[in-house]
Length: 453
Image (tube, rainbow, N blue to C red; front, side, top):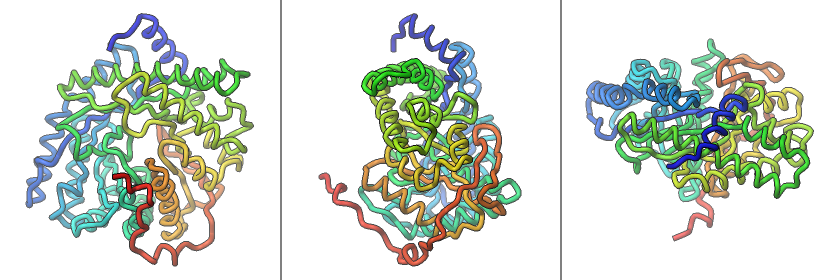
């Protein structure tokens, strides 16, 4: 990649003034060669491989930060979905693997380690059932381990049996981490159409078709896009779209440069640059504020979904022009607790769970970091997951649910996790029952759109 001097100066300005940073450099590591029927040997192999390959990941990322003057907010690792390397183990043995991952994460100094994951969109093996049972205990006994489960896809349909297990797991995780505001649920994502090269936590895992080790980079940049929109206050939509695309182009170029340099210092392959706009609770770093700056009174007003669709499309177009290595999720994240504009809209009553769901049809992921009352029934959570999965399945896109039934909390209260996880207002959910629907079990068949061969 060749960079012009003016590009470098503009990147410096974005970094210093517009909250631009690299949200994460995530090293993906293959663990398939760590398989052994003895769980202790498996754990030992996992710990050794992670600490060997990623032992200097943080150090190398910090060197690149200093060299180029661009902040890297998080240094992370993702691994092969653990259920794939532990199919012979029971739930208690899987928890030992989670503890080995956690120990390795602390040893190398990363923020989080992801890949305590399973892919059960079409069915579940006996080992995968044991793995799903292990998730609440694994997340409550570790600090840095993140988990994800893919329960549906456009090709396979939606596995309602897996959704039932996962909704119960979410409730149990909330209870087991109740002394810490049910924070375990913030480390657990349920996907439809999960991707293999996502660098973002909590849903990252190292896909089975990936190389031995790669570095994937997730950029940020809501503040940069916000300033672009403010500079085009009265422009028509076509002019505004062009301005957003140009901005996405610039931040993607900077993100790929950093990702490639970190990969080079680690001695591993560069994977992809995920061009998702990832907000933080900091003022001026909000996707919600971007939507308001486009002309809405606030997030939730009529037109919100259209504004988000345009933003998402422009970010993708700009990123694709900047790089041939765009991957991951790539679009615009709308996590409630991690975005000051979204928090404000929920607190004012402008944004409901139902409107959020509509917005997820056009954003890059789904219902993210949504806090709900702790007494929300498991079947209701399952229904919310099924609805979100249906949006992903029908529209050939990734959707996800990271929902937190905060133990002991009710609508109108809020929970403050601090840092990037931010503050989550407890949102109301429908009191209508989904129990009979969910308890049918089985699988919702794949749509006709899956028949593409």
